[in-house]
Image (cartoon, rainbow, N blue to C red; front, top):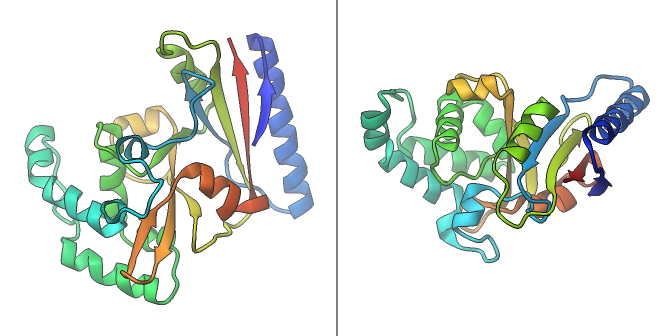
Length: 241
């Protein structure tokens, strides 16, 4: 994590230029384009990269309630009420048994969860919809626009906050991984709530393999950035009043 402290808007623009220059230099070194830069704004410079699920259920222990299958069971059971109040329909969403089988098969062959989600677009799109409507989510939302991220940073900072923060996530080509903390990005090309497109969103998730229970366990993004992708990802944080 690299901190770039800035005190005003022109200095924020300079920080953006520095990050873009870093991406261009890395792309030239790799000889190919890199994934889109992603940004996330927070109302306090003291806040970390925590999902709403992490804030609801701290990920400091191996709690089975934080496994992918346990979580999927909960969101599947919530589907009728969500459809009733939202007016949306997810008729093609896999039932819990139908989702459990490919998860166990994928894990048995040491497959990454992002590959499985690419093959199950209805699951991916349902997860994104829940993220945008307040359901505790393992997804962390990012924007392709630094200005959208800055808007959310300044929109409603908590009382007593001295500085806001805008994170920039620079991904290298390909996605490395660790069985203990694999961080990956979902999106941006998927059907979802209009907010997904208006805010130019992508989403990250971090999981670990749990071979004993044939499941994936959610892990913190802080662990994922430092451990799962290693040198393949860089995260910068610009802070300013």
